[in-house]
Length: 261
Ligand code: SF4
Ligand code: SF4
Image 1 (cartoon, rainbow, N blue to C red):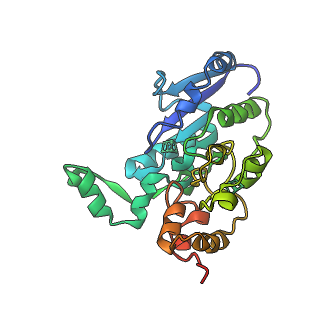
Image 2 (cartoon, rainbow, N blue to C red; image 1 turned 45 degrees about the horizontal axis):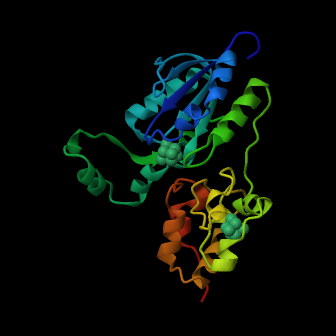
Image 3 (cartoon, protein in one colour; image 1 turned 90 degrees about the vertical axis):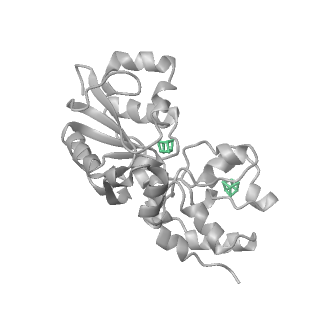
């Protein structure tokens, strides 16, 4: 990537566009970025060239249709390095909740002409269909995460994959633990850091939007939640939300979460 400007594309699949906003929220840093990169496709911001060959592609959203499959394969072929951003792209997002529901009912309740919709049997994250070089988790991802990854890539360094549990970040920031002091069912012990422990910082429990951390013990957390008066269904709902296609937070696992007697 030395010499000429690095060519970058930002693509979108099924998603709310929220993660792409983390680029636009860079503010003045975006101007500096333009000195090093040439953003050739970023429909939300202006440039449109979806078939451009680029050094780095950032991909938001999950895969829902046959057309999505064709498009992501073309993007993979046109990209030197492919980065997925956000819970939709890395772990299915809210769209993947239809994998655990009656799909026909859902489609009929959302679309006026359901017969015109051509859906895959399951919503999948991007890495289920093509090789992904880096995953940046969160719903939404933030500007700090994107900036850190881009800086590393532009310097030829492998970006850091943040897998620590949120509890570590929470303690580094000296937040009072809302689970210990207030009995809130905080997802911090199984959720990866990256958000800066925003929720515990304002006195509320983490609800797991950054997905699973490394080596999590979901069953143990479920057991503790039962002592906080959460029934199995409530615990499952906390796991199967933004990241239901993440194996560590999968519906099957959530359904089998053990509860203490
Ligand atoms: S991860 Fe969250 S913020 Fe990002 S596109 Fe999906 S729903 Fe939107
Ligand atoms: S508030 Fe949540 S994230 Fe913070 S230490 Fe307690 S359980 Fe962990």
